[in-house]
Length: 428
Image 1 (cartoon, rainbow, N blue to C red):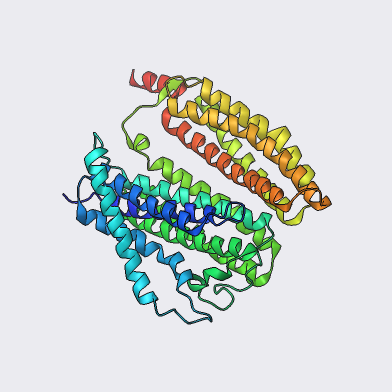
Image 2: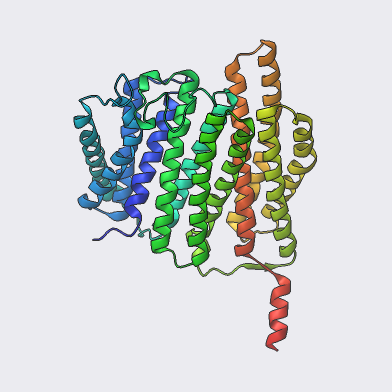
């Protein structure tokens, strides 16, 4: 049986993103797992990827080998850190074994996992929206990239590696792992995640060009490619020019790029593409308008947050905007979305999540303020400031994603009562 278009790419890239999440978190100084435990967890991700393949594609060793090889090839982006020599331009002799060996290992583990998935966890119904699933893999990778970027800013590690696109003269993908400590680890890992997100976005656009019938969706995917390319260049110029303005613009564009991917994921979902009709009720136009305004308010608040993180000059405005405008608007939109749509469970869940996260975000904002002041006074470890400030920034990105999702789904799942009345009148 031939694998559906995009299925092997989705499983291969999805497994890679899961492995990178585990690897990145496991090497953070606050956690720092032992190398054997970290390796075991990463290899477990490969087995789980194979299990998903077997669950949805059945027993297909050829497909499992291809998906595993995709994962192995993508992991060369970080495996190179173990292959770089003592000086730039040199590769250790064992690279001739490590490169094919790592690809063969992931292919083998994926195949083993697929046998388990096909035998014990086989899905009752086939899954046919692999291109839509791939978009959410890109969203997941970008979510982690935003967190890694937030850590770089919180740790003031943006210039820990002061050249680009090289890293201390090394090819970026061959910089020795043994030298990735402290701020260098934060900044260099952020660069590697950026490369993964860029490659994932490019493959996403190519996949949608092949499988997507809606021209506007295909075009939006290529807009995302342009945005991520511009984002990479901005990040590099921020380093070479040592420019905080570019750093702020880099952070803002990251949020816009993330919003674009979330919108694409919504448009590419099975529910959006289904023939389900929208709920007809009064007040839909107002909800659509208000949800759009809310997205604009959240974006403006994120701009203020970026300015505060880089220049420390708009704290009062950032707090005032959040407490007086963004939080009340988001809570109202969240509970309105939950309460006014009893027959739309997705909108209800999104509404509750938005209202709940706003409360968490206010607590994180207060915590970030206290932690920053305590760190400056020397009464609190810097790690607490880094963790809370990064969580505050990352939660803001998730809130933006929820706002964009609600705005999009208001267009798809709700129909203004006035439109139906007008259509009925014209039909008569």
